[in-house]
Image 1 (tube, helix red, strand yellow):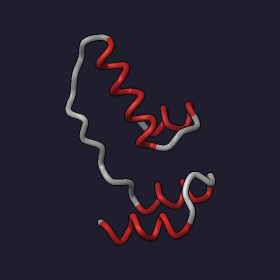
Image 2 (tube, rainbow, N blue to C red):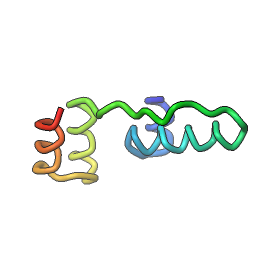
Image 3 (cartoon, helix red, strand yellow):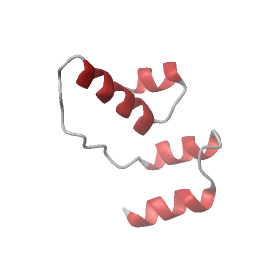
Image 4 (tube, rainbow, N blue to C red):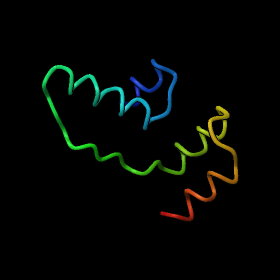
Length: 63
């Protein structure tokens, strides 16, 4: 999944959602359980400008 994330240039949740959509289109359904992003993933999202520091802190505190 990490390689797909890098290839598409998107966050893990976006890559996972796209992958799940593809599986669904070809008739392979799986539960839509998306794990909470890790600290490293949150920091990567901050570095890419997808979320700000305050949002990252909120997500860390909610876990």
